[in-house]
Length: 88
Image 1: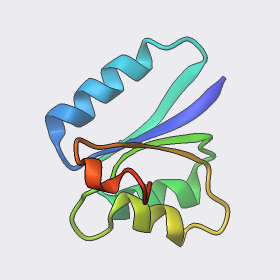
Image 2: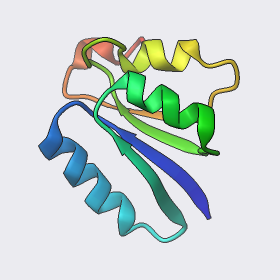
Image 3: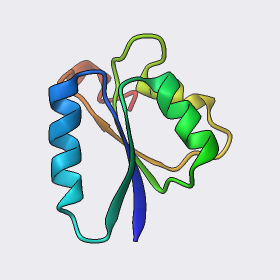
């Protein structure tokens, strides 16, 4: 079983992502966060294998969140902005 974290500042997108991930066998959603700072707190206290994260969020972007971690889990970036494809 893999533990995962959902991070997105858009409530609808966050809820849809969580709904689909909860249907995937072998995945356990351990937390759902509305911003990168909240996710950082979860990542410091929980064992997370995979992070499904939006890129463009206020305060701390998904890419900045990833770069701030010394030992990062697998990150899957979810974005409708194609200009982030290369950076992610």
